[in-house]
Every structure is written in structure tokens, then in C-alpha cells.
Image (cartoon, rainbow, N blue to C red):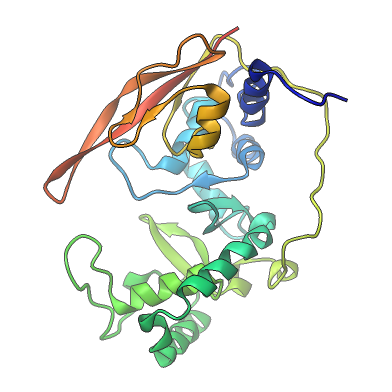
Amino acid sequence: MTDSLSAAQARRVSLASQGFTGRRPVSSPSRAGIEKVVRGLRVLQLDSVNVFERSHYLPVFSRCGPYDRTRLDSLTGDPPVLTECWAHEAALVPVEDHPLFEFRRARMRARYGDREIYRDNPRLRAWLLAQIAERGPLRASDIDHEHNRRTGAWWGLSRVKRLLEYQFLFGELATAGRAGFERRYALPEQVLPGHLIGAGAPEGWNSRGGAPVAAWLHRDALLTPFDPVVWYRPRAERIHGFCRDELRGWLEEARCRDVCFHDAGVVGKEVDGERQDFPMFLAVAKA
């Protein structure tokens, strides 16, 4: 049994565990192939930025190359293979992992449950739950109510939308996928298997076991800041040895490492009159 790993070995393990093994498929992956990739990652971060592409579509591309995005979308269908919950951020996770994030929902309830808008609107909250129970999964825009009016520019969320968001954060609501990137709010029993509803996190973790798998050698992959390899910055910096500038993105290259992250340019977007740059990266696993 190995008690320690070299930095190079740790980087290889990191890349292999994140799906950078073998060769890319020679053809577009099937729905089952995409599901296999996502189950290996266990999480696809969602983000509203849509300058280049929605963030949750890109990790599959990084590992498989071009693919039919509707096959990934179908994994949130009926019955769902993936469901949305609050992991490190809003993310798609395998349905069976939903109970693992009960600790996050509990923290959200403890942190935000006494917010004025949530605390002072019990009747509206109950009405929203009743509407979804009667009509099935709904987007906020599907709900006709005097308090479902935007309150300003940019986010400017209505009272209805804000309450739906809190109910989702607390686990009172789940989601039935998205339509045009709008959440379709649902009661947990409408989308989750019965044995998962109200289930807490298991007491132990199952070991996957298995033999070591070699990471890619001399293979390129386009990563975004939301890719599972890099979204937790302290781990990425420690394992892969590259740095980032807090305000402007990532430095051009980490040299003399098993993995180099090259700046692949930025895509810019005008936000409230100011340009915001969203960097893209090319990761190269070296022999």
C-alpha cells in the first residue's frame, strides 16, 4: 500500500479520475456514452454565462470531442438520470447523489430561512407549492401572479421567483430540467425516486476500487474555469502548479509540469456597462 504520492503521480491520478484516459471517441458519443462520462465526473456545474457556450456542455466536449448536446439534455428528462441541486454551486448531479447534498440544503435553510421575503410570505409559498402540485413542473414565467413582476434591470427578480429559488435551495422543490435555461420547478415526488425523498446522506462511502488508469499523454483538451478539473482553485493550484490572477483570470502557462495550462484566449461580454472577460484554457498532459 502506498502511503504517499509524488506530485507527478498526484497529477496523473487527478486527470485520470476526471475522465482524461484513453483516446477520444472517433465518432460522436451516444447518449449512453455521455451518461458514462457524466457519471464519472459526478457533477456538471451550471452557470448563466452564455458568451461562448453554457458551462455544463463543455466538460463532455473536453473529454469526447464534438457531440449532440440534446443527448446530454435528455438526461434530465422523464425519468431523469441527472437532477439539479446546489453542490459547490448550482450543478447537475446523478439522481442517486441527491441525498448526498442534504447537508448543503440544511446549511441553506439555517443561513437563509429567516430572510424577510421567505419568512413573511408563507401563504404565497404554500400557493406556489399547490400550483406545482396541480399543474406539474413549472418555470417562474409560467406562473401568473401579481407578485411575479420583475423589479428592475439585470437580475431584478420578482417575489415569486425569489421564493421559488429559496424553496429550491431548501429542498422544498426540486427541478425537472430546464427550458431555455429556465429552471422547471417541481415537487421532489414529481421527479425523484420515492426511496430518495427525505433520505439523508449515507453513513459511509462506497469504495470504487480498481486498478490505476493512465492519464492521457500528449493530448489536448479545452477546459473552462467551470470544469471539474479546475473549478476548485486551491486544489488545482496545488496539484497542477499553476497560478491565477484574482482579477484578470489565469496566468499564461505553468512551466515544467506534467500538465500545462495555456491561455486559449478570452471571450468578452458587456455587463452593466463594463467589459468582463471569461478565460478559456488549453490543458496539455505531458509525458
